[in-house]
Length: 198
Image 1 (cartoon, one colour):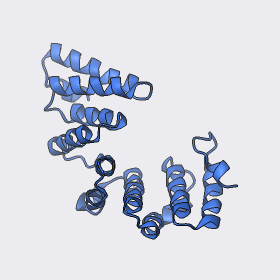
Image 2: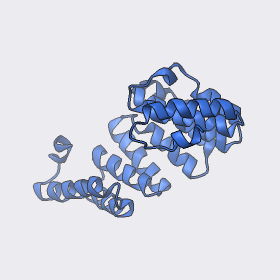
Image 3: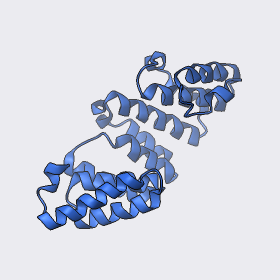
């Protein structure tokens, strides 16, 4: 990030850095305020990928999916980085375009994703299938060898999404079993898996 900011004038770099810091500071507590800082940062340094990406994520967290999509596309054009692909697909879902989300999930760029982003893309694609009323396909999308993983950070989200997809498909008993497996790795109780396992 610092390297990218060095391409700006010293004064502008200082302003942009402050806005980026505020995006991180308010991301959880006040997403709308973080989004405003994202807009300001992009206004001051719209040609920097890190700024457009930060603005995109801030807009996404604030529920401004159209703006998020525009910013993340710009960041991708500048940097070629595909790590934001799952968030872009989820923005399409948020805009009521599950087929566009599935197109992103099936694109060649997905092969370049790291494991965590690949899992996230599976979760988004499964959600898009559910948006389309394709509940069995949503389960199939999440059926993968990674479900047995219980150490990676993404294991909790994957198991929860799988259990939830099973529930939506009417496979109640299997769903409860997977919510129980989810609860095993959810030591900090981030989810309601333990309740849904009953």
